[in-house]
Image 1 (tube, rainbow, N blue to C red):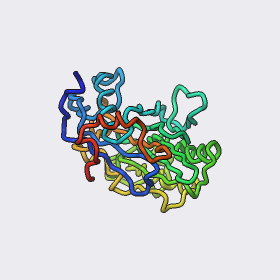
Image 2 (tube, rainbow, N blue to C red; image 1 turned 90 degrees about the vertical axis):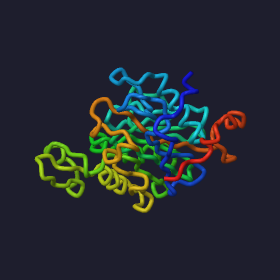
Image 3 (cartoon, rainbow, N blue to C red; image 1 turned 45 degrees about the horizontal axis):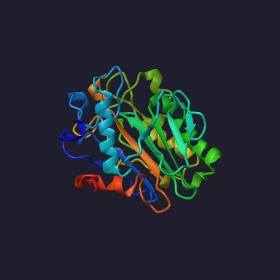
Image 4 (cartoon, rainbow, N blue to C red; image 1 turned 90 degrees about the horizontal axis):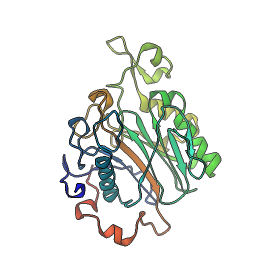
Length: 285
């Protein structure tokens, strides 16, 4: 039985931000504490596809363990159906076949953005009580997915741009990410670093920060430092990375939800009591 399998790679550990207030639950997963055993997917892989060798059952068990640890059990992750563009789904409207961002003002819906080098972005507005997530790869960044998420929160959920808090999560850094010269030239000059080789290095996190600032988010409402956004390619023990691992790479996720009015996470008291003691507190960063 999958639930009886011991975790691989130590306990589950989350990265969290002090910027997001307690009325929200949130976190960025790391790769330890799951049951996936294929080396490139070990161990808390959160995504399954025909191109990868991890079974849907193992991924489902990993998601269950993450939910227990983070405090949103038994609610499922509402994972983005990524297309590497800029479409935003407003929950309550018809769900698109593919989208790179989602927003909601409904308590208890756990939105999640997958990532394995692309930037998982969390949005939270404590005034309007709304949240959002986005998956910002280099194509989505150029297409303005972060700014589109801000626009959806303001026009669809009544948020004020000055109230929105944004956290950029673990993703490939400019130290490890390079594009073809013609692709890199589409980014702002301050986001491109000239490397010794032919391909320039690109800073995706800075590109998204600049986009968010231009969209009206105050600079001090954006967190993108190494405490929440280390380079995934530089830390193989902690994160999956497409750049580093190749085609058979695992997936971590950033997630956020609105707690109910009592401040409790989704799920009943009975369900919360089922959590193992090791899952009731987050490991320190």
